[in-house]
Length: 339
Ligand SMILES: CC(C)(COP(=O)(O)OP(=O)(O)OC[C@H]1O[C@@H](n2cnc3c(N)ncnc32)[C@H](O)[C@@H]1OP(=O)(O)O)[C@@H](O)C(=O)NCCC(=O)NCCS
Image 1 (cartoon, rainbow, N blue to C red):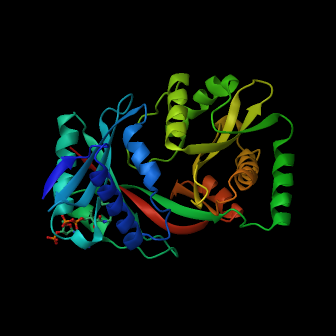
Image 2: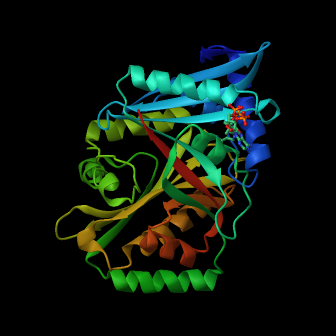
């Protein structure tokens, strides 16, 4: 078995790496959103602006049996690194996972990283039962659970129309007219980029991170535009709704759902929802999510479910999601080791 860097121009290796992900999805979590071949291939040649990425495959007799995806932040959190590691279900318990993990640890160490994480599926409460392989594998290699996120799924028509209208009316009344609600599809309107960068910069400070030692990243207009270019290149379209505080002109609450430009793909992904601490208690979180949900239905009729993951301790966000009809599927465990 050899580990080689995945060349995005090598069609056989790219399909082999995708096949590992497809087979693992079918074996480990068929309820979860399926990997998307187009999105995977485009991601290889469109790295995010604030992260160095590297891709490796484990190859045995010409067949890809394992896949390793490494991300190293390159603007802030330079001590940190993460990876996603997956072994084809038919090739497990033969040391492929350990070889890929060793490769990642050496790669991260060589670049001065001192804290790294990998994540794996876990069972959560009354959700779907998940295999313990990932957890046992990581614990065997000395990793400790640092953060648990719960994966929930919501049918886009989970609420009956009357309940949804009623919730929306109550949320609008609670928000009052201090706020202007603005929605868009795709790129952030030019006049909002600066204020959106400000609220995006608060994300890491506001989101529960468990034992992960991450510093808030400053998001500026340049990064926001680069991310928007990347989404466009990858066929990903965000559907977004914000609240602008009329008095200050600042965006003080934001929610976004990411969708694939593929009518046959039935899942969409909830991105961050954030309300500035000074503007909490006005039902802005619920209001934005309801307005955005209607937009998802209108603009992406093929989407059946929206997926979200929240830290298990993020009670205010979870309360909103439960009202909207989100149901637990499973959890993700973020396992950490210090190098
Ligand atoms: C977790 C995963 C990567 C392990 O890959 P692998 O090639 O089977 O791992 P290895 O053969 O190197 O296993 C090393 C050790 O991990 C532990 N381990 C791995 N799978 C295990 C399982 N199903 N049950 C119990 N222990 C397990 C064992 O201690 C094993 O040593 P042993 O086989 O001598 O007992 C693979 O099961 C997988 O792809 N799972 C789904 C994706 C996932 O959860 N990835 C995140 C983990 S980083």
